[in-house]
Image 1 (cartoon, rainbow, N blue to C red):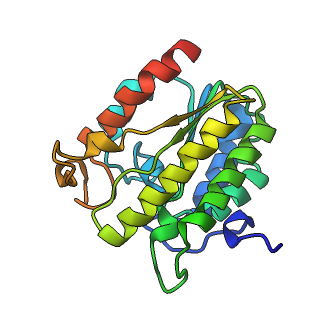
Image 2: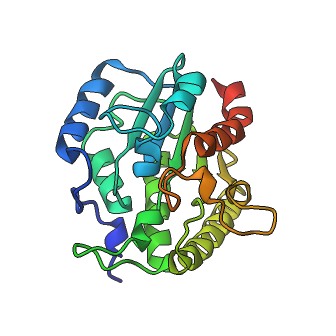
Length: 230
């Protein structure tokens, strides 16, 4: 059976507001000396939390929660799982044995561009699953926190996100029978109003990327899980 493209490591697909290769090379230098206790891996939602290329939506929250901790941010804007897999294969986790890894991956599989025609939730799931399996092989003892994808404004994308989140939850429920060091964290309800509608006031672009208030929700939800381990 042919492997889905989401599972096949590849270099950058999209251009974003930063130099993908320069960021990768910077991370290779960073891990030569840093021994992170906490690693975040994902796309722009993770990348733009702190301010490493002069782009940020939540640097104040990052500094408050993680400024005094040894943290490695492996978020790259517009990445999909195949790009994250490539980066892991090419040294971004070298010398690392973190206590906790936070994964927020998958939403860009539902972003359609001239370079990428999108994936079904099932194909996106295979990529996230492969990413988790790769991280577990690299860092067998780490606690992995897999995030449910945050809500997005566009209804077509939200339907795909809902389907993928359900698959991820079922996957983690199954894996936890033999690996208790993995957890699925779903805070999607906190990004909606009580009636279930999308709360655009928690997004910098009112669509996809959290603002400072949104990142604070994420950090507050993570803290009880990571603080005892750090």
